[in-house]
Length: 315
Image (cartoon, rainbow, N blue to C red; front, side, top):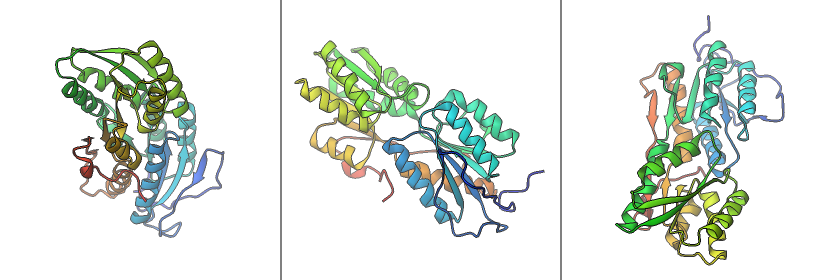
């Protein structure tokens, strides 16, 4: 029978494989009877993922927990391999920022078979009994907030909208689904293509989009990194009037809202997500009174409420 997380000795092996890296460690001595070890499997290489990693490592240090980190680079097969590597280390719990919600079933089954609980970031599952907990961003609501801004800004006028999505299969699908559902009947989506959370790809998509639809009024872009590239493409094509709404709430994104390059962004702080995940995972392992499912606050940020935006990335 597995012992409780705070009574098990953390086992530390030599790093195996190029995707697995030893992250920041807490102050507890390895092998201590009350040490907790966490495996953090990150999903990609965007600014969000980098900030999420900083938050996880920083909060783990605060909690006195050991943490190992791995990056799946938007590949579901790599994600499962990373989880298997973490299992081999006998971590107390896994924190997973998945690359594909469809991959979670296999990930959770693999971890459950080994007696290691999974705590999810950004998304949850249909059955919360399968997981330790989750720090959930209502991604459909995020998209809906941006769509609501367009509805208010456009009023009764008929408008044309383009979408530069992220990578199919996880967060992007939920964001885009919420955005499309929130648009008014007077808004027509004339283009929807994936930018793969890659600025260079997003710029190519935007160049083709504005060429095919020179009368575009608005664009929804699935993160701010891509949105900067989309803005560059639109401006180069003489489409400075196309209004961009996006997602994240980084310092650079807020500055773009202030300057007018972006019309709105939805702040969903990576710092808050990562810190909540570690704090609550440790608390749940220790049988504390902690919310199993924690909902991350969201804020539609425009030039009128810039000062209210939360800190996005740990310093």
